Amino acid sequence: MSANVLTANSERSARFGFIVAWGFCLLFYFGQYALRSAPGVMIPELTSAFGLTTLGVSALVGLYYYTYSTFSIVAGATLDGLGAKYVIPAGILLTAAGAVLFGLGVVGDAEVGRLLQGAGSAFAFTGAVYLAAHGFPPRYLATAVGFTQCFGMLGGSAGQFVVGRLIHGTVFWEQFWVLSGLALAVIAALVWVAAPRGHDARPAGSGSLLSMLKPYKTVLSNPQSYLCGFTAGLLFLPTTIGDMIWGVPYLHQGLGVGFAEAVDRASMVPLGWVIGCPLLGYIADRIGRRKPVLIGGALVMLVASGTVVYLPHLMPPYVLGLLLGIGSGAAMIPYTVIKEVNPDNVKGSATGAINFLVFTFSALLAPVYGWLLKDLSIGGSLTLLVFQKASVVGLIGIVLAMVLACFIRETGRAVQPTDIVGTK
Image (cartoon, rainbow, N blue to C red; front, side):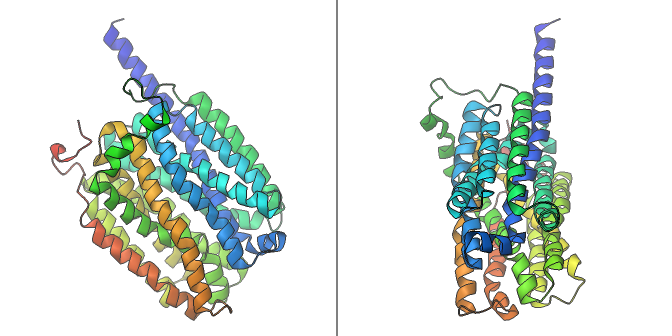
């Protein structure tokens, strides 16, 4: 058998290994998204167990985003420098430990646990995209990224719809967190077994953490990276803050909807992502252009968000949340673009950089939005009028994202290959 045939077989085997590991990493992404959104359906239990106010629990839950954004940088650098075989399982185990700590029912442990969850979860999407980029042909990358986020948001929906029922009839909320940690530990072992040892070739002496961070100089010196990060960050806010933290309180306290129905209706937004992420990714691949799909999805978000807040009875309640989620799938398109406007050897770092930018928005604005609600309510109840006044900020953010998207370079296959930095 010739050397060329052996090399081709080896490459096919490695690609298959990356795809299998990607499949297991999707389970991690599903699980961490469920853990990210689950506190929103157990706020009464958490306020009672930790002795905190609703806003205090919101601050506790928001700790997740501080370490998630910071460790996104670490995740991208270590994936580019060390590969996926050990890095991703380490992130999964961090998340598992954080889940167990959160389930102990002690506020100090819960704080540490939430920080560990954010740190470990930073390896989920970044790792899945890294594996997909090495396993799938480039023409399917946007579809694979969209499907990855679709699976994550399915976890986000389960974290509201399924967990809300589990902790009110099957298990105690503490047991949910501990069992989730054990399940994640099993997934860590599966990823470790499946992932190939190989990774992108690195220059000599590139083993140090400092050298692994060097790719960020390339990514962060590119203005297009910031446009991608800021656009995606603004488009994520209606889900990370609007739905996953305040969606149930808005429906329950603002609209007077029963708690169980509020949970079901809020879960429609991440369920819409399950449809929107792969659908919009497929359309972007199909037409060979990213920007029209990105701006069109943002426009759907704007209309749906405004209707949810200001004309909540205009359409059937579950339809509005689903439309908002479908349009929100556009937030994933900049994740594809940032890799296409940067060189191929910084795939992991590009994803880490955009994750850092996106979730820094959430980390900084989650407490600001909580403070704004408290200030508008003058310390009283959160009425519909209070939510309507505060929601102007989110709508302005979507409009700003659409403006920024106009300046992002088009990277779809409809443009000349030489126009794309990452194309060889």
